Length: 133
Image 1 (cartoon, helix red, strand yellow):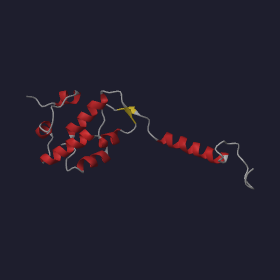
Image 2: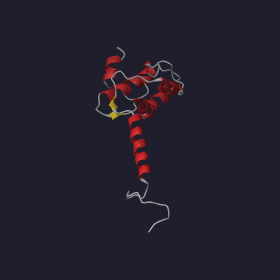
Image 3: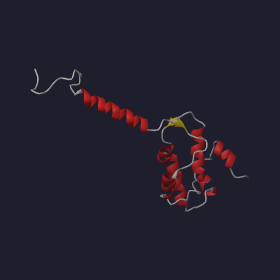
């Protein structure tokens, strides 16, 4: 039973064996191109794309420094692994909320406007960079 000119490949999917092998080869190649998940580096900084994203909120990169330090400090202390920390930064709702508050406050300096815009900041980054009383 079968169509004329068609030779079964012996593959249960019914596809010619060369097609499946090609798909597997492409799949392996695409996995190799993707970055392996890693912990957030303790010296992580936003790249050019993330800096443009920050500036798209009308906030300077310098004014967003506390948000960067909080993100880095939070994730560097955890064992979570991600393949793209830049993307994780840009998709982080807390970072985005902070940038919106900074923009709405009309502040171009991070200091008091950041600290007054929400709950008291915590974490290693804030203990180190907290303003002295």
